Length: 238
Image: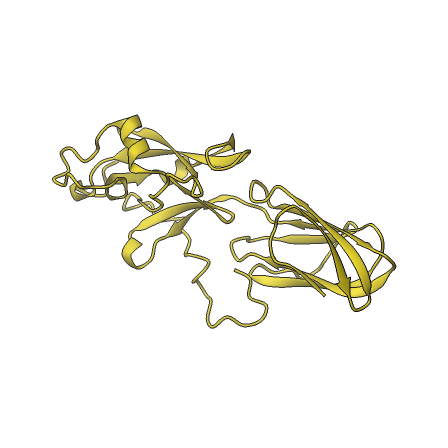
């Protein structure tokens, strides 16, 4: 069979035991979670087409020629084993929403901002250019933005067509406070600033985890790479 391991535009001609098939994959992932496979066998024959359904996607859906594939589940590999004919289409929908992911170990007490597989981040240099030196008055001149930025969870807004990391990429606008954490987590947002977090692939980005107000951990989710995942067996798709 065929395993499509990456969601990226591709056009491949593959020789299988039952014949030759051309498989065309169309997508703008990870800008959206829409993926389309067009199957073009030289003659109708049976084989399995498989692809992953990521653990971060709560409600994936798959259709073959418009008909829903039943019982698809996140965190698994979806396998469609059938006789394929010229022009058969498989449509995969992986809905994406912004989420806050709880930090672990050294990042405990902080969160990262993600949408689908994309991590959003920033860097000290850009923040100092935009908002001055937050380390002043913190008692720690070596403080980084991760030490002092407290983000407002309900303020996250997606920005489309951001070219910082890639053409047609995305970014996130967030209300935040630059109050040193030594002063306490319940600092409020009386004098908020707005920070734009760009996709982590931006070569200057180094800061990915930030603090939350003490009483606003509601809605923060565990890291899907670790939550509820024991030894990796066949069918696991992270």
